[in-house]
Amino acid sequence: MATDKTFSVAGISKLDGEYKVRFANDIMRIKVLAKSGHEDIRLADLEGSFTKMEAAKMIQALEDFSDAIAQSTITEYIAENTPKTSKPAAKGVMKPAKAVKAPAKTAKVLEDEDAPF
Image (cartoon, rainbow, N blue to C red; front, side):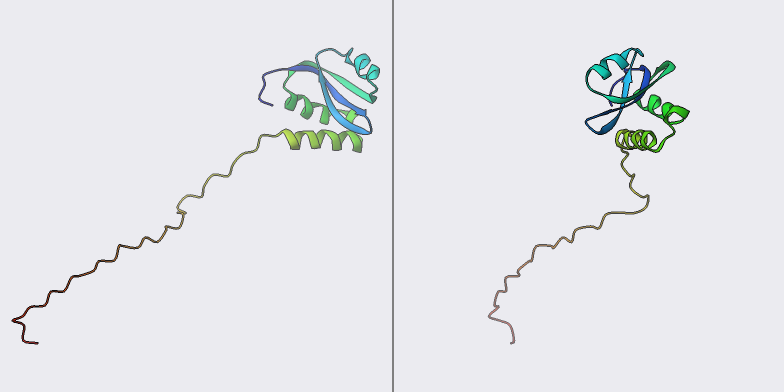
């Protein structure tokens, strides 16, 4: 949903047994949906222009969409299209450091002929 498009009509419809949230800018979209085989078409004029998320939240509160099927369809749409936020890292918690081994040093022993041992 990375778009700035706005819509003045929103609702739900059933196509091939599956309900979906629909958006349009003219209530006459009902004719196009019906012609395409949609059933149980319910669109509401929102009296203003809204983004898809705003429109979905608005119709969710309307009486015409208070039945279980409509609420389930709208709730599912909102859940799927809500932007996911990444969890910020907790303050004061550091990632475990990797153990680093120092290179082994080898000492070269020289024999001293004058040593007492």
